[in-house]
Length: 156
Length: 112
Ligand SMILES: Nc1ncnc2c1ncn2[C@@H]1O[C@H](COP(=O)(O)OP(=O)(O)OP(=O)(O)O)[C@@H](O)[C@H]1O
Ligand SMILES: [Mg+2]
Image (tube, rainbow over all chains, first blue to last red; front, side, top):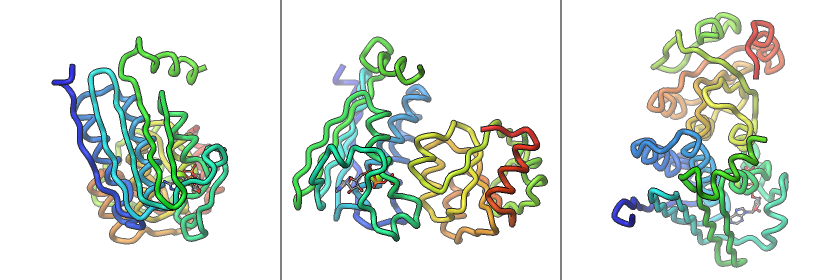
């Protein structure tokens, strides 16, 4: 199956608000071109966008890698930034350290990481304070994989 | 409800270049927080908002929002309008408040 894999990388620049979201938008287009199912594209795009915005807001620079196989979409977003001191707290809905000017732009409601968790089948966060954060998430493409289970739960 | 009916209901101006006034909108959603749009909006809906920066367009694209209404005469800058044009997302501006905008559309039968 590895010969069917599609992978690539986008580079992200902290505070570059005019291009913020462009990587996720491109990723969405790639998935559309591959004729991935609509609801899966939406979940992947939303999770990628939230992760991308966090790099733009909280880091100096970062990278978004994507690996698409017939089984799954795996996205790894790695940044050089402040890091997250308490991941459990950061995952709490409504928790945000975003400054006022970020809130004025419509971000900083503390829903980004919970949104990623909700849309992904699997999420791993690794962070070093003062170093950076690596976020990896997987969305399964097959109904018979773990993705289908979560989908059923979500629709309840 | 078509985009044209929405425009007339709100006395709105269309400020984007590419628009299909026959575009059918089934649902509407109002939000000033991007994460809320991503968490709760329904695909192919109308977004009603005060926010006018480029991120609104990116967020709308990601969330499959079909069209955007800016309330209280809030006008996005040229950069934002240009981005919406490339993403083919029609933009409307109304002088009505968020409350009146939602109320009028709800009255006309548009639901969330
Ligand atoms: N890549 C990152 N580097 C450093 N800190 C981060 C990073 N991502 C998230 N955080 C921290 O975790 C908090 C919660 O993040 P989350 O994305 O859930 O919410 P938010 O970005 O504050 O608001 P929203 O995503 O709703 O716009 C952030 O306020 C920030 O303190
Ligand atoms: Mg965030």
